[in-house]
Amino acid sequence: MTNEIENSVVPSSRRDFLKTSALAGIAASFGVAPRVVGASSLSPSSGAIAGPIAISSRNGQKSVLKAIELIQSGADALDAVVAGVNLVEEDPEDTSVGYGGLPNALGIVQLDSAVMHGPTCRAGSVGAIEGIKYASKVAKMVLERTDHVNLVGQGAQDFAVMHGFPVENLLTEKARLEWVRWRENMSTQDDYLPKHSLESTGIGAVTEKIPRHWGTIHCSAIDLAGNISCVTTTAGMAFKVPGRIGDSPIIGAGLYCDNTVGAAGSTGRGEANIENLCSFLIVERMRMGDSPEAACLYACQRIVDHTKLARLLDDKGRPAFNVQFYALNIKGEVGGAEIRGGNGTFAAATPEGGRLVKMAYLYKG
Ligand code: ASP
Image (cartoon, rainbow, N blue to C red; front, top):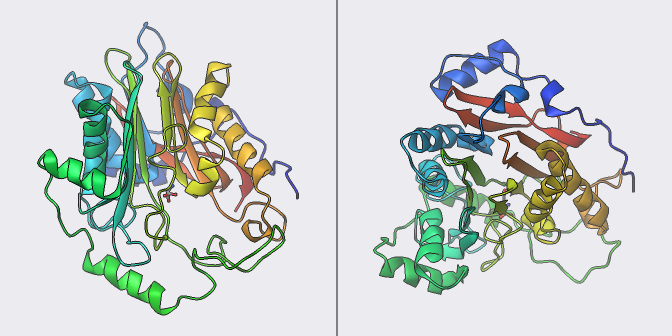
């Protein structure tokens, strides 16, 4: 397996940002005057409290702005990030999260979400919950109104109903037609695998040669008090085996935060992340002094080192799938990285507005 880093990592402060023309369009969608900045300007220049700042996966451009707006009016970071991702959960056009998310192999939308609250070191999560649009709100309710951390399946839905969440049909016509297309083309390229070995190839649906829909939103923020919280919410891997939960509701995988260090979260192939608990790893690397970007790259490399199955590797022996990580630290520095990249960005917002920040990567493409 070739593990050399094709694109050696340039510290965020020296990385180029999007060209003015590209940023102008993106910044407009952020609702602020177009501005090109370096990552270092995302860090506070002075003051004991680093923030407010919010980051998210790229699909959270409106989420980070919402989070910052709420934080500026005094909201706790957890309330702010959950309200931010609710905008994507309710958006039928985002087929990776919440309402309109692509269903499992039986055509049923099952959602995963987790939240973590830095100041109290508490977490809540729901896995494979059906019929509830705002999985992140239920995860927060698990944190606030149970003595548990994880609720799954029917129990998670029953708990949500007990707290007044309506049960809705989350399968939009657009998502149903996508599912029908997948089902009508089922073959060896689904997630039910025949008996296989470390050397087996050509089974499973993870390679880039077989189009497969992924998507999730992660959002972390620091509020006016300097407290850190985060949320991850998703419809998970499209057409997954019913009952499968991904990394998003697993504390330490889909997200993690420590109020004295920072926060991290993930999107991409959840199985690889679960097996390496990368968000926890990233926070611990930042605790040891890594920048957010360096810590995210470290986690990418850990996944590369631990990917042994031939069916998950490309013809150069590298993971054929992708995983993205996003992190911020207590100083307000941000960074992101993915295994395979080149053009990846994530969203960040401060009171000055929103912008897209380039992600580092191990392998181009
Ligand atoms: N990480 C999610 C999961 O494995 C999917 C994604 O982010 O695309 O469920």
